[in-house]
View 1 (tube, rainbow, N blue to C red):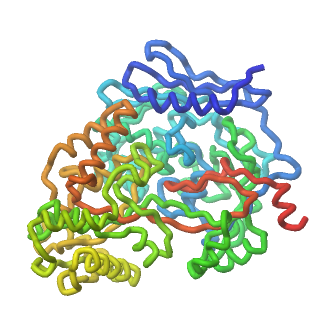
View 2 (cartoon, rainbow, N blue to C red):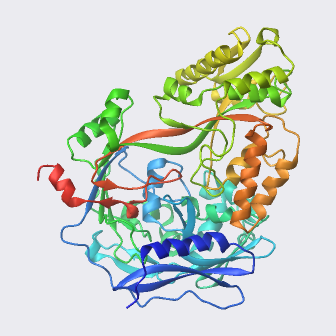
View 3 (cartoon, helix red, strand yellow):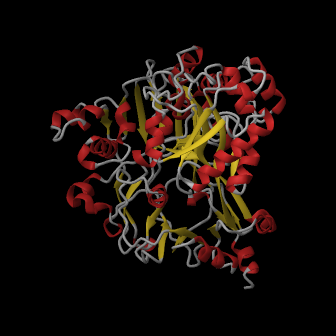
Amino acid sequence: MVHIRYGWLFFLLALFFLFGCAGNETIVVTEVVLVDGEPMVVTRVVPATVEVPVTPLPALPVREVSSTPVSLNIAIIDTRRTFTLDPYQTTDDNTILLIDNLFAGLTNYNASTGAIEPQIAGSWQLSEDGLTWLFYLRPDFYWLDTGTGRANTVRPLRPVEAEDFVFAWRRACDRRTQMPDVFLLFIIEGCQQVYGQNEPTEADFAAVGVRRLDQFVLEVKLTQPANYFLAMSSMYYLRPLPREQVQSLGDTWALPENLVSNGPFFWDSRSLPGTRLILTRNPAWPLLFRGNVDEVNLFQFSNRADAYALWQERSLDMAPLPGNVSATARQALGERLRHIPVHEVFYLGYNLFSPVFRVPEMRRAFGAAINRQTLLEDVYDGAGFAMRHLAPPGIVGGLSLDLVGNGYSPDYARRQFSAAGLPSCRLMTPVTLLTTTSDEALQQAESLQRMWRLELGCDNEVIRIEQVQFGTLLARTRLRESARPDMWILGWSAYFPDAHNWHNTLLHCENSENRPGRTCSQVDMLLQQAAATPDPLQQAELYREAERLFFGEDGLEPITPLFMRGRYEVAHIWLLYTPNPVGGAQFNTFELDTELRLFEQGG
């Protein structure tokens, strides 16, 4: 009998993040051992010269769900009666929630630690030039024949193979698939070339840099060194597909009644789309469930008020909070109210060619005069998190909220204003703050206007608000636009949980749209180094230094981060879970105290 404590498991996983991408020097191997008859994942680091294949488990018995399964009852705001569950044809949040629980990927984003951990890929190697990844797949992940859609009729069809990834990713590169964010895959060699063809040939597909080297070995060739590809591999849009099913049924393969899936849950045929969707635990899932949920009931509502009312009756374990619940009522909820971060950061952008904001001292002055928490209270009922730097916590290379950046500092703001060469805001050339046409956007702009009047003495004649349609705002803030505003408010939501998708995509002088109009400097070289280094510790340090150079006391301040969006949801005390800020809720990590629930419900 093997005895391994959970603490050691997390320690070993930590070793993976320290050494897992260290070129050809080391390799991370994930194995499964039996602990008291249950499979447990163990990760270890070995020299790359040592041949250590993924250790296969004996055939796992299909585990029967208890006659009294643990059922999670939650609300979603969605009344659709039809679902297309193709990971490559959606950006809808509720569909992504389903996909993230129905389909496993190469890796998994751990919402508790913010780290990327093994899933179908038990280990991987990165070439010395950073261009080639080898993923070693576990042989015990299976596509499921769900039979009648109940656990006792589920049987494994065949293992998930490298060819399933090859098929899925080549299909995604084909413009006929109409993948919404296909440009993300252009980092894979040959993908953009396939997308450029109306009818790509077999030779075009064969040139895409994703290949089966063995039944369980996947090779991925990139167009540039990109350590952040590991974070991308955890996302819903890089899932494998059951290729025989897709080839035989075409687009109808993704309808629930035809679905063949491989995730921790499967679609239960008892679902009544429009009323209740049911996900049932995959009895052949080879990894440990961190939670104890056997069945997820997703009750569909057209509005939050009805869902909240049912939650108050203790008929739901979790529900979104309606927007009209007062601050006093929220406070009375106590620990049942959850303030959930959403990885979408709003920021104030500056035109660096503006006669006012061409000097960093003035940008730092305007940024430090903003009380972000007051802004959140004024406009969003406190739903959000004040930001002093760009990349949010909980991602690879992200920092805690208060580690870098100036934040709200009126004295510093006034000193910087003086250092910019103006004795008074009354002598400043009037500037335009451009925002969108929504009432919320106007409230936000007026809140900023009040703060600048209070802290810097800038009256409303100096700070002029202009509202335009969102598309017009994007067009007018492009770098080469002739009549650009002095300031604007925009938000950014990343496509994968890595700081690269924040700094590089939003701020790099050449690799981004560079709306502020920055000239290249030392910080851009740091960003390129951070994206290419195989050492995660060095990567984190490089991003921290980049944040300091952008938003520190003497930072460039091309933009001023304002806040990360948040949302409120309510959950009863018998439910323990970690929200996922970058995708769908991970139901296999939810823990329900069923005895406490029964007691609280008066049973």
